Amino acid sequence: MKRDFPSMAEESTSDPQGGYSAAYRKAAAAGTAILSDSRSGMKIDHTMSYNDPTIPLRKRIAARIAKSVQDIENPKCIDVACSMGKDLGYLKEALGTKPAQFFGIDLLEAQLVKARENLPEAKFTQGDVLALPYGDAEFDSVQTSRLLVHIPDFRKAIDEMIRIMKPGAIGVFSEGEMDQGMLLLTSDDRLRSVHQKKTEFTAKMCANPRAASSSYKYLLSHADVEDVTMEAFTNFLFKPTEMFGTMDYDAQGLKKLVENGTLAQDDMDYYLAEATGRSANEGNFVQQFCGPIEIIFRKKK
Image (cartoon, rainbow, N blue to C red; front, side, top):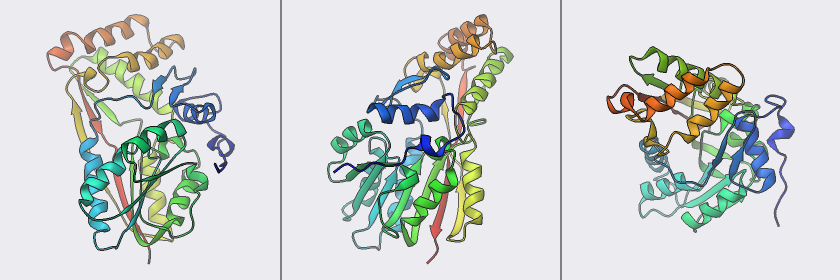
């Protein structure tokens, strides 16, 4: 029987008019993986395929967790906000022939349909990080990626994940600082100015835009946690279209900036034209990922 969980909307008093974070809640209520929000201008199918530049980080995390649980018989490993189950797939690869139990939970049931296809042996559940449907001290590893950036009450979310960890279990969060997560390497000041406005807008559309630093600080002060550390990750998009194939996703946010008067139409047009034109072809539109940041910790024994 499907269990009902408190929605993030019930916990949140921030971002009441929309944004990326609110779009997840609305998609969950509608039973879809298509995130749509009028305030941010976003409309994106969260089951679509794209070129993910963070795959090296995701595999690094999988290797770290695999090493941590290597000596545990049939370990229980969970990915919170598991999306389509790909990170659990990387963990399975990292574990090789070692038996393990894989669990995933996500707010969007429509994503879990794909997850069950991708990793049939795992147990996937629809639910909310603020009320995880598991007992205390169940799991040998807990991981999450790009979740806490969308949770206003991120401390409660972290407490829930720590609650379900066994003493000595490893936790790994992969989170960003949305106001500085992507740098534009260019000599063109006009492009740089547009990119900065786009970055600031993106951060405003997130419920917890500085998720990495806020989570790290909270974990350091947490009575049930030890061995807290962070590791950096960086990568490059040498052309702006490498990730999604087009600039359509970028254009969504830029259009909202034009609508609200933050950006001039000709600056938007220039930015999009250069992203697929001369600047991109001459190496003058290189984007550097400054994250996500990997945050590692253990639950005290």
